[in-house]
Picture 1 (tube, rainbow, N blue to C red):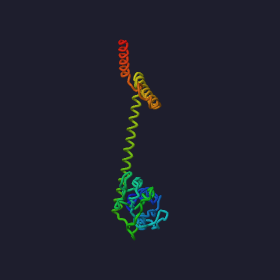
Picture 2: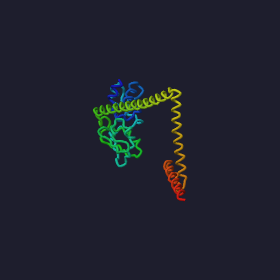
Picture 3: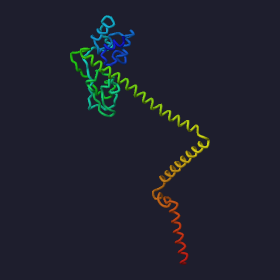
Length: 254
């Protein structure tokens, strides 16, 4: 029954019925927990179809869910778009294309007019434009369009689930690698652990000496930062030997 009810819904995935998508609304109607008059995109004609299927009386559209109106399509003012991707994340049928920090645009033929992209936009650059003036409900929408929208929504749900599973798998692999590393370190012999600690201590000591030397050099006046302090030990030895020979020569001359 839920399948048959879903076939009579316009598949705009607009959530105006109070459910996250058309399928959950169809299931709620089949279970008797939702009324048949909660779908504004389907309008009065949609209510009549559902009433006939379920052998229920035709009732007016519930105004709490919205009003029946011509079909609309989202249009993005590309001069104002900042490329935040929030509208892309909100679109239930992947009708918006673009990338982070780049201009977005709506593929009009794919847009169901759900207007879920309007509210998240931080710069109010999305407007809903009527494309079926004078035609509302199923008069503004075809069964083929509904079927296409349902397929795109189903693929989006599949894509998001796959991306989440892949991301979870990457995080799990990363956690497993860290765990293996920790286990390897914990399984090291006392000698290996001691050697690792000595290496860490040597590296830390060297880094500390370099830091202190850098601070000392930075604290010296420019006139003292050059001279013998900047000369290597081997060069100092050579200079000392030259001075020694000169002094010896002077003594011989005397």
